[in-house]
Image 1 (cartoon, one colour):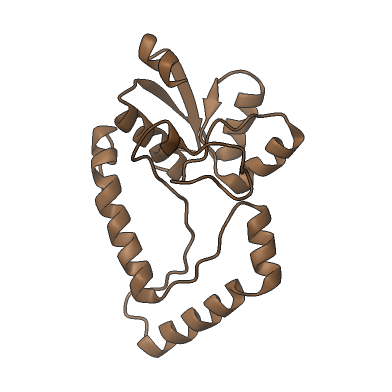
Image 2: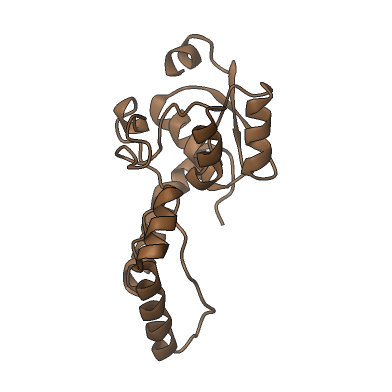
Length: 181
C-alpha cells in the first residue's frame, strides 16, 4: 500500500470516522511519517466507513478495534496493520504499522473526565472506583475481546497523557490543514 501510494501520489483514499477523529489523525500520521499522499474521506462515524469499504467505494479505512472486530472475525475485511507500536494481542498475526513505518504509534483511549473545579476528594473517590471496576475479571475479559486494554491510571497520570497527546498531535493537525483548538 505504501509503495502504491508512493508510485501514484494522491491515487489512494482512506475512510475515517470524521474530521479530527482518532481514525482521521491515524491516517494523517501515516501520511506524515511515510511521506505519502493519501486522500482522507470523512464519514459520519466508523460504521459508514466500514460499509463503504465493504462496498468497494474506498480501498482502505482506519477504524477502531471495537467497531472492526466483527468484520474481521467474519472475514469480510482484512486487517493490514494495527496502529499501536506493537502487535495487538487480539490480532497477533497482524503487523503493527511501526513495522513498516518506524516511529508510527497511535492508540485510542477512553477516560473519565469531570467539570473544572471538581472537589479533590470526589476526584479521588471516582478514580478509585473506576480503576477498581476496570480491574474486575468481567470488564477485563470484555474489553480484551474488543481489543482494548484497561489501564486505570491516576488523575495526574491521565492529565500527563492528555498533555503529551496534545503536543504529539498538534503538528499532525497543523500539517493536515486543521486548526488545533
